[in-house]
Image (cartoon, rainbow, N blue to C red; front, side):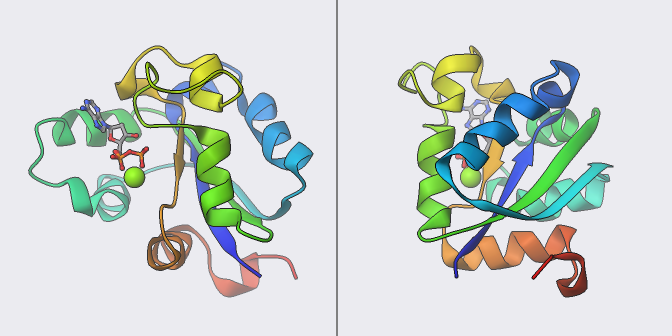
Length: 138
Ligand code: DAT
Ligand code: MG
């Protein structure tokens, strides 16, 4: 069964939206198989967002991701990778339709609340940044 990494960014924890965000994936029916509250090190933030190194927003992105606690989750279910991205919505909140997390709860692209893996390869890579096999249930 497909699994994907979803990360609640620091502003999500600071705004008290952890429950709101988790409940959207639960209501869809995905199974929560890994869950951690942690503060990202510079190294882990750079590992997660390596594909964006060199882009103008990269320093701000890394600074933001290391600015407070995040919640790392692994969700499992049929089509979980693309399904989670649909629940999250497009990167730019101005493009994100109502009903998506970013459409309902976000104004700024630089504080768009949630990260979700975008492919099978990135899901596997990103899950392994945060979780060892034995830490995921079932
Ligand atoms: P996504 O998070 O939808 O996968 P992405 O991988 O293209 O989007 O970018 C990673 C994060 O970088 C994104 O969630 C927020 C930040 N970001 C992307 N484009 C940006 C921009 N033009 N200005 C500021 N931050 C940006
Ligand atoms: Mg991305």
